[in-house]
Image (cartoon, rainbow, N blue to C red; front, side, top):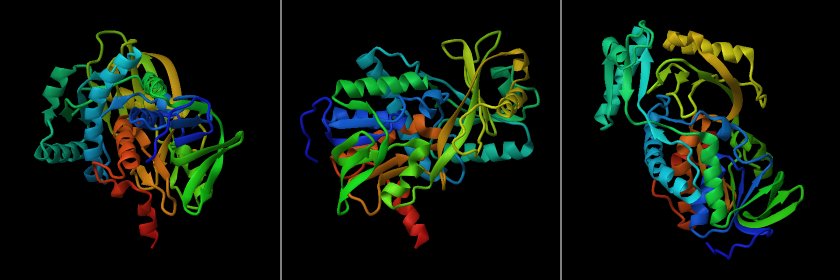
Amino acid sequence: MQRGRVDTKTDIADVVIVGAGVIGCAIAYFLSKEGVKVIVVEKDSIGSHASGFAPGSLNPMRLPPETIDLMLPLTCKSFQIHKVLSQELKEETGIDYHFRQSARITLAFTETEAEELRSVVDSQQKQGFKVCWLDRDAVLSMENRVSPEVIGAAYSADGAELESYKYVLALAQVAEKYGTEIRHGQVTGLKRNGSKVTAIQLSSGDIACERTILAMGPWAGLASSWLGFPVPVGPQRGQVLRIRASGLPFPYTLYWATHYTTQTRHDGLIHTGTTHEDVGFDDQPTEEGRDSIISGLLTMVPFLSEAELVLQTACLRPLPADGLPIIGEVPGWSGVYLATGHWTKGVLLSPITARLMTELIVKGHTSIPIEPFTAARFTRRES
């Protein structure tokens, strides 16, 4: 693509990214490092929704069974990029977003859960992953605050924690350093010449561009009317509690069913969640959500019954219709791309999504096949 000199406060760009969450800021970072002139448009503020409130727990192997074969190459590659990126961003910005590798223990409290987890462990071991099954005694010897009702657990050393909001800020700062311009604005539509996008329409005026990337999270579905193409992504509310517990810090992140509790963070707090609520665009915390999270937490770690609740938050995840992210060009358009639908894996998948989008725009192809993730899959199902 043709790249131009970066000017500030211009109304023309090589690429306009709609959305300054973790996906949009990561893409801006990767593109701007390649010399691409980028403008990011955000209707609120950087990382002000799910990207800023996410617990930042990176677990590349915790995936729904129906998506694991397609998703595992993406999540594992993205996790490897995170390791490198954590050093690069800290050196470039001075922001320590507290990336720390940590082990994961997924608990089983019934024989059915244990059987399912053993099957996952066997499958992942055959693929070369360093996972193992722990019996009850092994679990309790590693963490004796886990409920004695535990039957066993799957153990993986491949995981990490980070502070999501600071991570997004670091991406945005380095992107700006390389010439990205981040603007506040409300996008109202697209302009086109034939199938080719020519501009992004804002309530304050147009921004001419060669390409645009819609990284709008749970609001991506609202772009359907601009595109004349259904974007099957909607909001799903997830709630998180931050708690302070006495005693030694927790060295592991624990999972059970839809619940988790992170290792103790640098600020002394533990993040625990979550809920999966289809309530439209309502992002307010609720008592019901709090009680559900606490119930799951105490099933895993009864010791935390005396913990102090410090903060309760809620945010909206971008939930795709089929559980897979949408990455790639929009059918019927030239130069319009989607990068959304990452559900609970937005922070984890942000580096690989950004790399793939950058490859697609700069080189015209990607190093990992993305056909299963393109929006074209929805047209194939309809035909």
